[in-house]
View: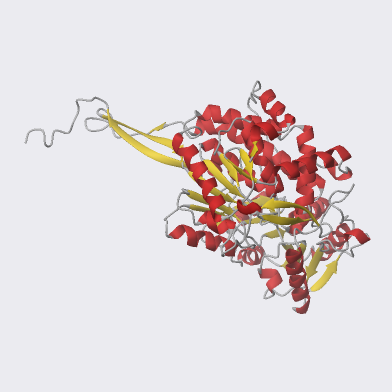
Length: 570
């Protein structure tokens, strides 16, 4: 057993203690751009030797299960190898939790919730813990080290990892700010007169939902975890976090950061393991978690196919399940955008090449007015040729590798199929040094003249692959954008506000960006349109907090002596 009080790094303790004396007053009174796209200068920086050394120490110390505020080995010491996406070599390992390990984590969370050490704390007290977490995630030494861990683990450049850390801190601060007010009881209006307001009162109380299993993906490892963990903790829930085995390392460190900030044992437990890796005797860590009968809710981010499995596991228990799934988002560009083509090109590239295209909301289909198509393609391809693809740890890298060999093979197969279907391919020629030749790189690729029947047009690719088609009329553009099973996000670019409003009202997605792409704020709810294959439920915003809250209706008399008298005269 690795006990937290002996192993927590001093910087985590000091950052948490320092922030306890500070209150972030009106911290969200001004807009905050989604941090992944507001940290621009970081791309020019390489990791310092001190940051690399600190990252190695964090990995060595934290790559275990985190249960009851302690790092523990998995049953029988079972481990999974962690490969570097940049060169394919193993550089670490994580614990492979058994069904018994999962049971310990869930029961720990259940004890914490039912015992009230977290769930019955005042929302203001929980908010102070969240603020201390945010402060730690802004400590330069912590940021540098966790950026190195994240970039080595999932392959994104250091600049993107730094942006993600900013999002994490902002999100903890946001829920610390809004949760206390949102969780207060609300008085309800009732009719006046006798038998109404003269005799009765009514209110709703907002209570923590319970024990939540959070299963998160590998494309934004820490950030996706925080988008669930922060509102769940703010609401008073206890959480069992299970990150993807392809990128778990920063999530392993999150447990001790939250504990150092003052969360009691069981408030946040972190377990690691498969699928796809199975346990001895069958099954997987993730399956053991979603099958557990003591979970009150499951919140999942991942593929639509995996989302169906989450629902299957929850159906027999009638357990609420939040699903943030895939997308095949369109970016509609009208002819009046020509005057702003530099900005248009930049947003198009942000929409598909950030995260090497491994983004559920990626605007991977560009629909451009036919009068602008030739000019847009010329400028777009020129910009694509400037993307520096390479080592995520190196100075100036803009795009790194994909997360795994399997993902690389899947994306390359989709590109090959698109070419076989008649698409015209425009790919950046990669020039990788010898030590990166075995990495999981895919060149930024633009496909034109792709038939709408091609799987590359219709299916989520989850890689740096952009398909471009033209349209003639506004109605045609809207039809092409909506012609998909998905409903997560879309974007529209036009100088005409009335046109944008018309198009926005017709797009069948949970999010629409006007004259931009991939921009979100802590207060903006993010989720798919119900009835489509992008899931249901929300992350971010007040809607993200409500995912972890039970509303209870309370109706009472104004006087203990009052009754309707229906049976008192009998």
